[in-house]
Amino acid sequence: MTYDELKLKGAYVIGLELKEDSRGFFARTWDENEFAAHGLEPKVVQCNVSYNPRRGTVRGMHYQ
Image (cartoon, rainbow, N blue to C red; front, side):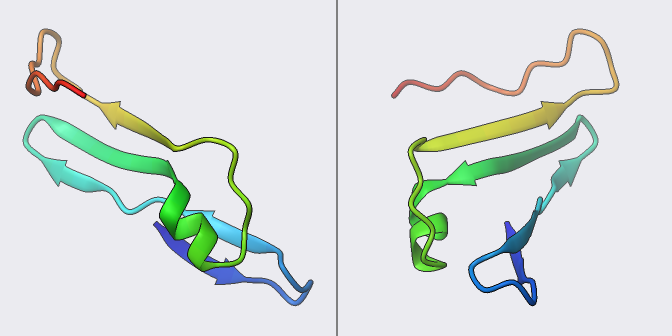
C-alpha cells in the first residue's frame, strides 16, 4: 500500500499496490500495522481485493 500525505495534517491518499500475474491481481486494502506506522488508528485488521478476468480461476486455499 502507498501512503501519500496531504497538506492537511494526518490526511493521506492511500493507494493499492497490485500483485499481478496471468490470473489477474491481488491487493491489500487494509493492513493494521501499516496504518499504525502512519499514525492512524485502525479498527479493522486487514482487507483484500482480487480480480480474475478468467472465469473459474483458482488462486489457492488458505487457513487462518
